[in-house]
Length: 136
Image (cartoon, rainbow, N blue to C red; front, side, top):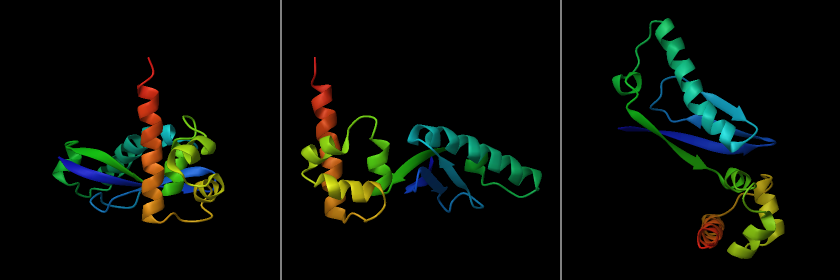
């Protein structure tokens, strides 16, 4: 099974995505929410493939047969924004130990998190998830 990497970025007030180079042509997708974006990705790819076929161009067999899966890579801003409905910046700050103001800068694309900071944010989100799962 082939993997199609979906690079997701927070672009001002929208999520934006591009698909990896193993998909012929260029595809750019935007949506207001991460859920909408995840819904749009397969629909947009199918529309794109129909256009390629209509133009008489060839499509790799694995792509034509649907033998692929999407793997989403979110930049730090998109990661934080995708979790907004589950956890506030204050909650992510408490769980990760990253200053709330700094998180806001990351979420708004004003600053780019270093790898270590991004890892702290992800670990904080996992901590929130574990705590929610432990509720009975």
